[in-house]
Length: 364
Ligand code: SF4
Image (tube, rainbow, N blue to C red; front, top):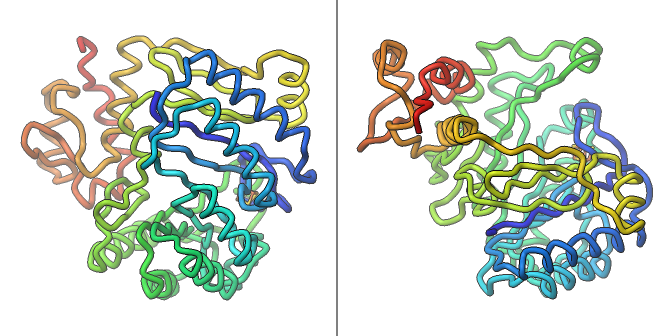
């Protein structure tokens, strides 16, 4: 075990594009009690293993009071062996934290904030249903720096209805003016009824242009792309997410959280009320469990590894016409026994991965 994820499900309101397991009820002591109980139980079961990363995600982990969050972190320290140099990250919504809360997070050991900026254009933020403005993001970054955070990530969404490539360029400029150590960039995706209800998203070729613009601007500013959606100054890559992508075992606690303790993958029930009542009744909150076959593990390594700048070992992919075609089309390149996506390949990552899947060497 290496990494622990805690899902804090509370949100002030549901953003129209979001499919995550969240709760719009008030932050509760009962939930904290259940989460602490689950943390304690797993700490005992696994023999208080060392943790190198701890990530508080959600939901909105910046919503609860600092004292509430401090209680959860205290339980983690008692139940697990949190390494002195562990990455302790918290996802923060702009406007949720004043100077006092920031200082308390620092004091309890949080050393990385991932700030959900999404956009600096208030019209786009309105369309995304975000309860904050661009000005509040600037203020949150300032407060975080003043509190001593030296590892700040900003999350952005592009391909918002009505957004132009020039508008996206302005958002990137605004982000870079804040000198973040890390930037995450996600294309807006709408599924089911959400896809049909609103105005259309920019066409695919415009979305591809936006993805390429992000690569160019962020890399030129000293933040190389180390994963399809993530850019960082060297040394500031998210250690927690790298654990997921490199298939290192991790534990996820809280509603809907996923775990991978090789060869088992499992997740908790998504609904917060059910999670709390099952744990407080003395049971488990497990919703799904499966054992990955060696073939499935190899497939996951391929899916996840291809998203990384360093790519995958060539031995994961069977030689053949499809591989040669992808190399000839300059979607893939060979680098010291590994296969990695080219810049164009990164824009078309899903399609390239689908083509390579068929070539997976099942003998591994
Ligand atoms: S704040 Fe984040 S987790 Fe909560 S509804 Fe909005 S996008 Fe989803």
